[in-house]
Length: 187
Image 1 (cartoon, rainbow, N blue to C red):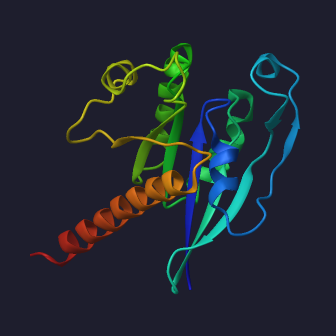
Image 2 (tube, rainbow, N blue to C red):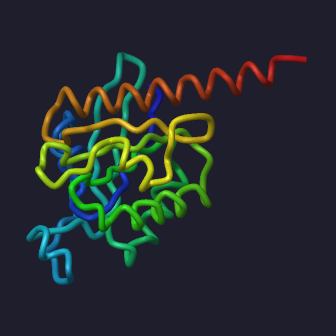
């Protein structure tokens, strides 16, 4: 069985742990601890190492899902998790535009370490304060086109929405693999 490692990265409170808990076929493993910094304004507990979930993706493949902590002080975990990943999704809370710059910093951190398929998932789109998709694309500096990842909306609480995000990411991963194989086989 092939094991695919997918990282779920993003800002604090964007829904990384929820995303993994929603889709995992096993009870998700988490390292949540009481929030003691400004994170406590958003939620009571926060991830301090990583979350882990598993999902069978067909009879021959399993996805191992690793959720990163959102705070920069835990970026050593981002580094550990992303280096072994096959692909990743960056979750960004659409209702907190003050964090879009930080989301760009996370994206840059990852890009400096790996060149793997990735997508951006916008969460909290159902909140009144949420920005619209086009404005977020501009703010994140992630406009459509070559070299920019797909941007999708994700409800981390909804299994169908999370599954759709994973399918999008897996399709991108398979396309990237196919393109790499084709370039190696062409004269």
